[in-house]
Image (cartoon, rainbow, N blue to C red; front, side):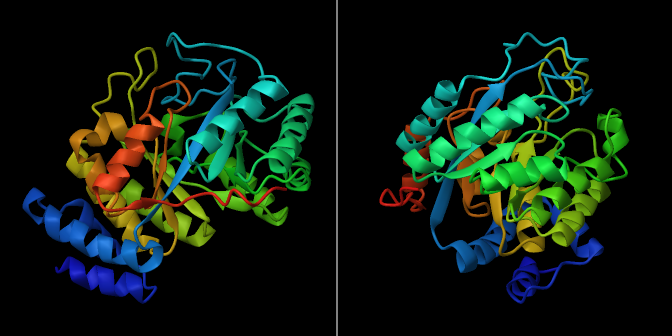
Length: 329
């Protein structure tokens, strides 16, 4: 099958069939240049040569009651990480200022735990109001499971977007977490959208899932219609149940990104957690497929420094999509 055929379908807004999706994931390594070339046509048609930068802050670390097998912050993790309650408002504001310096368009406040406590949601809402007043940043929150009231509080405080990943397929979800369900995750996305928030939702590649699980997740996200899809690649952490898992190869990562680009031609696709660890020397090639990056690190693992990301983007002939410094809320 010609990958150009999939690019043409995507540009018409048509979704690949399951068999076509499997062909992408099972492409031979010799076919990789043709696959990237086809996926890049879809990327360029919708995003040009722009790359959006995002920065996050781990605003509450560890102390989590969930058992997500991939996560170093879960209750079953024995990983050595920093553990602390919700950061102060000033510390969260300092993170936003660093995001502006990093040329990020969006700042994401992330906390561990099943969902925010009332005092936490109030504190985050207060920080959000000040961030929107003092910076031009778009603001995202990733706070676990949200009630309709939580989502409305965030929206009223000026939060633009909520992140809550599906992580994997509905079939495979019980293999990576038992303390909440796949449906719980979908309901949080529904609550956020009902409150008028944008949606950011993606998954993690390399947790032992099958090709069909990846395809199921890609198709499920097409039904959800998120505004942004972060594709994370497992970065195994010693002390977690998936600590000995063999991570996906750089070529595998590019095939998965290509699949998501064909399924989601107009959606922002973020080359997210684990890109440095898994894509290694092929990180720059991923810019032909995805159109946004996290810079400055993740929750408990380091990442690429902003200035290194700028250089990579510019070396590849792309350009950072700059925040409008004149926009002050």
